[in-house]
Each structure stands twice: as C-alpha cells, then as structure tokens.
Length: 361
Image 1 (tube, rainbow, N blue to C red):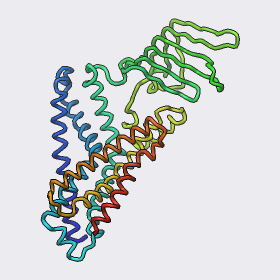
Image 2: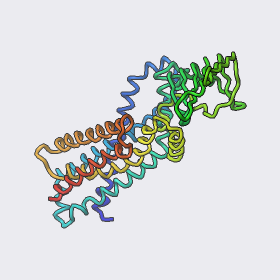
Image 3: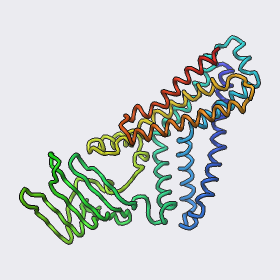
Image 4: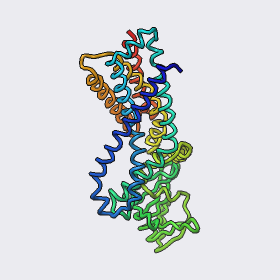
C-alpha cells in the first residue's frame, strides 16, 4: 500500500469515526431531553438507563451509518479537492480508478464491521432498546410490550388463535380463542376461554371459563367447564405480541424463525424477510454511497464544500427515503421482499456508475 493509499484510508476511517462520535451524543442528548420525565416518573435505575443508551447507540449507529459514511466521505474528499490535493494526485499519472482504491478498502472494512454487527450485536441491542421503551417509556414500569392487545396468529395451515391481551408477569392471556378448520375451510371446532395460563413446571395450559364447540353435521357439541388443564402444540411466545421479534434474533436464529413461520403460513413473513435481507443490503450500500460521494465531491465547485454537502445530504436522504418506502411496500404489498430491499441499492448503483463516468472525464 502506497503512502497516498494510507493517507486517504486514514482520513476515510478517522472522519467516519469522528462523524459517529459527534452525532451519536447529540442523538442521546435529544432523547434524554424528551424522555427524562418519563424515566423519573417510573423511577428507572441508573444502570438500566446506562444500558439502554448503550443499546440506543448501537441501534442507531447501525440504522444511520449509511448517512454518516456518505457525509464523512463527502466532507474529507471535498477538503482534498479544495486544497487541490486531488488534482495533484491525478496529475502525477494516477488514474481515477486507482485513486478510488483506498476508498474501496475503507468501504470494505466498514461493510465487514456493519455485517458482523447486524448478525450478532445489533439484535441484542434492538431487544434491549425496544424492551426498555415498552417497559418504561410507553408503560408504567411494571408492564412491557407483551401486555399490548389483540394478538392474532396462524399456528398452522388450519389453526388460528386470538388473544385479547397478555400479562408476562404471571404468563396469563385473556380473551383467548382457538379455531381449527377442515381442509375444505369449514370450521371443525372452536375453543374459547376468558383466560389461559401457562404452567412452566409441566408445560401445560390451564384455561378458565372454558368452552369448546365442535361443529357437527346435524348439530353441534358444546363442552363447558369452569377450569380445564390441557396441552397445545403452540408455544408461549405465540401468545405474545412481540412485534419486533425478527430484529432481536441473530442470523441463525432468524433463519430458523423464518422457516418456522413459513411452515405456519404466517401473514407476517414478508416483514421478517425484509429484516433478513437488510442485513446484507445495508453493508453493500457502503460501497455504492462511497463511490457516489467521491464522484460528487472530487471536483472543485463554485459553491465550495457547502455545495457538495448540500448535494450529499439530498442524495443521502433520498436513499433513506427509498429504503423506507420499499421496505414498507415489501411488508404491505405483493412486491417480493428481496426485490424491494435491493431496489435502493440497484437504483443508486446505476447512479454511482453514471456519476463515476462523469468524474473520470
């Protein structure tokens, strides 16, 4: 590696790190100012708050790292251009492609780091971040997000369950119902209970206010009991509305979870696939955004660095907008999640090629 490569790579990584160190504390200060009253009201221990902001840092650094990377590359490359360092480098006989090499090396380092974070560290941070929010910022310090209402799950291709609410403290669900359909989509039986409690010792369930209606050809059979112990094929987690469950799983756990939900015919499978595919697409965006940033900021402009930053900010937020819009479309429409997740990278990849050709000229 030549001196010029080391010089640019050092600036690449240092500026990106400084950008993170500058903006993450600003985000923490803003978050504290908005939520401090709620934390004091719920008497949250300092250790839990400290852990929450560690998770907050990891969660948002991963979420916004494409913007930080893009702006940091534009910032230091614009400074190189304004100081005529890029002109001197290219005038020495180095091609523009050769000039890009340390940028690509830097993007590779950042991408590998982001990939490993997305596989292992971010899921744990996401779980801690969301649990804290639901327990202390949206709840009263005693409940968490599992006490929210209206859980509807498809257990398998013919069985559906509904829960009105769930209390994690005593593992009890309220307004429980389970419906089993025949292959011709006619109702076979329906079980209803005012509440159902999980017994961890023997892995059974106890239903209170139990009613089972079995559909017959001529008449129905109804079984009513005040209390009934039984075993179900579904798990305790199926009763809980863990809306962000996919974000909290490591890569291996997420693949197993998706396979399990696909076998059940889950209606949320696209949401989980979006989370999986983004683990790979976000690191790749580091290369695309790096090339765009260099192409935009490697030449002197009349507006100077300010003009480059304005263009960069516009492109960065357009990328984030595309990422969010197509992510939602994948979850709510018939667009395949793989295509929807990769459309922003493909679109900006084409833009990167176009800008790179102009920059070479």
